[in-house]
Length: 147
Image (cartoon, rainbow, N blue to C red; front, side, top):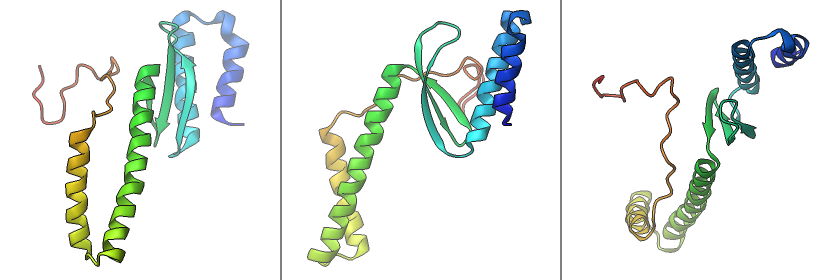
């Protein structure tokens, strides 16, 4: 039996006896156990915020967890989709330059750099609102000075 399954059974058995704080701690332990059981894969699931009841998207990658607003998740998804499309176009361009125009790898890389600069100038970036967990909001950024 997985740890997460054992925690679910424990919470179900003791739920009425637990304080709100204890329920919250066990819910967080359950989330952690589920993340660890997922390993280094990438997973997404819909959740409801325990504190506010708001809809959230929980993203887990390599053991790191983020709870995103729906708008943040959509913005990130759009950015990933765009980057995947650009990667395919970049690979096709490099292949074309090398096969059809006999560019060496360095020439193709230089041309790709110029195309990427032009592409970046022609479109609006896809970004999400920055949202730090309260547990790290007080921490200085890398290279920054504590306030």
